[in-house]
Length: 95
Image (cartoon, rainbow, N blue to C red; front, side, top):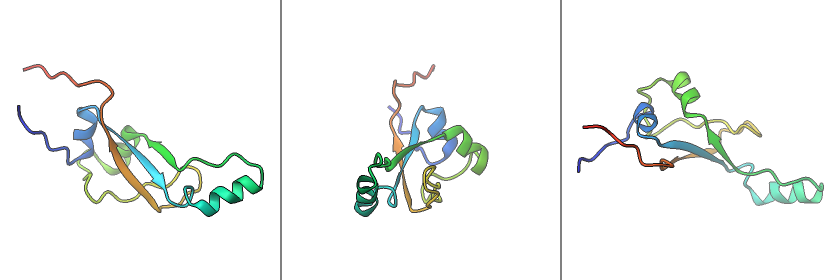
């Protein structure tokens, strides 16, 4: 079995992986209690990242390592962390 290094955005997309982000501002305990006291639904801290749009913005050869922060879609903060998700179904490659 060969080892595949997923170091670019295009390779992530080609092998069926995805990305999601987590916003430290939306996920902070103080933000949660502000929403609860105002009787609002607390905003979720995690969000899905559209990999195709990210490739269009940053290029297919954009590095996954040291990826610049993706702004939170809810609050606009750049204090986000990016994580790679595994493919939902195994990708079959023809030999």
